[in-house]
Length: 137
Image (cartoon, rainbow, N blue to C red; front, side, top):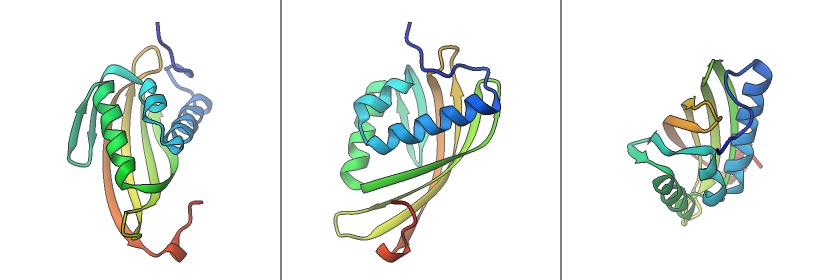
């Protein structure tokens, strides 16, 4: 049986650890590695994309990082209860033309008993910034 520690129900310590592990994984920009943190039948909403299952997650992430270059992410735990978390995040990236962006958002996460994320709902907004305005390196 696949497991991703820490497992729910979460404490403050394990919730903070889970968020840090997610941040670290996403900053690798490795869809093969990242998708293993999700259930086989995971459900996502990411902006206007509705994604179902690990394979769709993997394909989505590959497309994402073909567009969002030099991506750097910071996540922050906003709240948690039992097997659910609310997370605030921001990330910076640039497109092929060199325009930099800071993307802000919130995610709602739900985990199964094995610590795999079964649901991820993300709301995200983008702000154009200059290279000099970057804060995440």
